[in-house]
Amino acid sequence: MSTSNPQPDPNPLPAPAGDLERRPKPVWAVRVQLLVYVLIVLAVLVVVNRLVVVHDHSWDLTKSQRNSLSPESAQIVRQLRQPLRMIYFDRSDSFGHARNFLQRYARLSNQVKLSYIDPDKQPQSARKYKIQTYGTLVLAYAGRTHNVATLTESKVTNALVRLLKGAKKIAYFTLGDGELSPKNSGRQGYSETEKSLESENYAVKTLILDQTPRVPDDCSVLVIAGPSHPWVQPEVQAVADYLARGGRVLFLLNFQDQGPLISYISKNLGVKLTPDVVVDTSGIGRAFGASPLMPIAAQYDPHAITRPMQDVATLFPMTRTVEAAPAGNGSNAVVSPLVETSSASFAVTDLKGLASGSFNPATSRKGPLTLGVAGSMPATAPKPLHSQARFVVYGTPFFAANAYLGFSGNRDLFLNSMNWLVGQAKFIAIRPQPAANTPLNLPARTMRIIMWLVMAALPLAFVLAGVAVWWRRRRA
Image 1: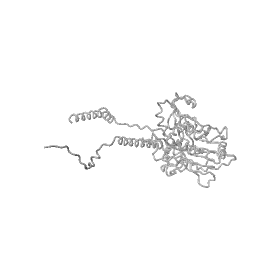
Image 2: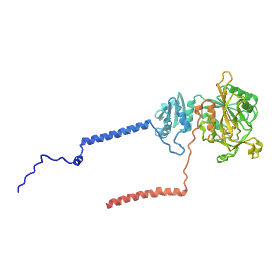
Image 3: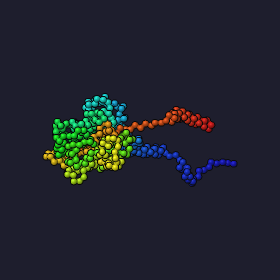
Image 4: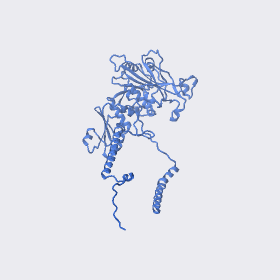
């Protein structure tokens, strides 16, 4: 049998579609495809990075929002109309914490410009801004600078307020008739109040009207903090003349005050002052260590002073009622209520009975009761300081004393009143509070369980997992 080589088919059938799909792609096609993928990934990264830079945002999930700026700080930053330079001086390896903190301000306004300088590497910049210690922040705005030695929100925001306010306002405190003094650091002193005013760009001075019965023209606001002795007529006339010139006065009265000053406020300013004292029977104050003679108020009437005070409590120790007088009182002042007590309060006029520890609700006026008012009236003197006089009256001087200034909203109410009086309503807000420290306290048994889980259970679990993987591979 003879064999011959088979001849190729002149009309071969086409290969199945599956065989064509399984054919490897040319090397150049694979490289082009890989290059396209790389370009797509790079484009996505560039777009995402650009979005992050332009729309920088973070979320604070802490209970007390300790990693976010307070509403007051945000309000102040958003008022910037010119570039604000924040220059931080420290060693280069210490910029991290400051960068994270200062970025909170920069996120709120594109007017905030941040820079970080190592004074050892740039000593000329350190000398220019008079840097003495590491960790100093310099704020530069509208040709003015301010150095902050401690990097906290309250320090930075207060410094920013000073820059925005410009020239200092001068607050005069009257003395000579038993008033609470800004130089007194005791419980009933006003030394902490003075510090708070200085942090908001006020200069605090004292004035004895018995010696000089005239309020100086450089007085931005006059504070009369609870005189314990009746004023004489020349002192009252000095205040009346100051208001006629468009002055601004904060009256903080004692509940037992009588005499020419009380008569002037009642007759000329349209304020009703009843000789009473407010008693709070709700019992809420006991949780804060307050007595019934320290009513807690959380109801505020619509006004620029109280606008940010909603849901913030204030404490008024030994206070009298202060109300707007009814229409037709003969005054040309426009008076508005500010703060009210709860319905569980009473205005007691029988002070002798109250001294014995009891009062008769049937003969006492039931709350809510007004504890403060704000008013304004046209200036009448020629060449006035302002076209309009302003005044605020509260029924106690003690809510702003050292012992009670730190209670909840007391400091804010006092400073808001001062800012409204001097015409700086845009700085009325709730001040930033120190971050609350909320430690997690666990029972000893729970702590032991956590310790054994971390030190024994988890390491043993990893060992067992490794042994199991080794055993399966050995048997495979």
